[in-house]
Image (cartoon, rainbow, N blue to C red; front, side, top):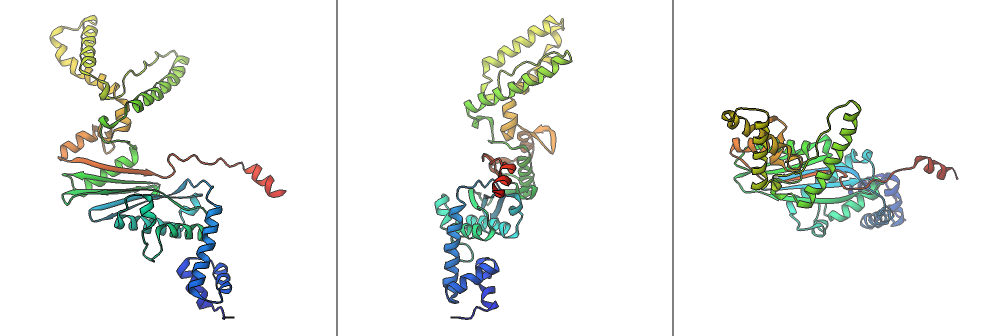
Length: 341
């Protein structure tokens, strides 16, 4: 039987990231054969990963990497936020994102076949990480953006990587591209312009907003305040020429009823029309980045800011860790009772 030296154990640990006892056990099982020990640990890792497959992994980090005219963004999940701050986990996120940016895979299946710097596939790297770290570790999603030489990437990660953003701008400098990425991180838009918003989505969001108004009105009633009206429209997509014309006529009727001299109506109507448009494009303002007030100067929209810069937002990607994942609700009392049996 081969002698299992400390140097052998160290070498195996460096190659696989395994713990001391796991590395030593693997070498003992294969009589000191390094390659077989690596495969032994890999097989063991796949078994561990399979046992953890049904667990919910909703914590983790985003990864952002720019490689020339290609940028990649990823979301890698773990089961706990404690693990997501682990150096091995952070290094895996960064390495996987770099590999995806350089490999430009067409889909997740192709991404998993990419080779990492150490020669293992991306898929195997996550299996190995699950075995080594002890939690389910998964590459949940990724996106690639490409630009021309005349365009700029903006890359930004917020809160230690909980949110990641990539922007592609035309006619802008790197600072503007990054500032817009920071805006998108904070304001969480879904699309670039209102035209991209789905009609059903607008209807659903209007219902949500009107429900909030109903809740506010309950509070207002307690202090005898006038109730707020429901929103009828939510997007400029819904404001047809006929609707705008009717709004203008309603404003004129209101001014006449108030006894305002007709000669000053032209000075009043534009402001009231803008107020009507602002009040009836709340879905745009929440979800379309060009319609949002720019966080670094809320006197203007993002669209107005970019116009001043002579710039155009071509594309963006925003990932937030765990969005859309239903997290498991732990019953700690039940867990303790189970352990006491």
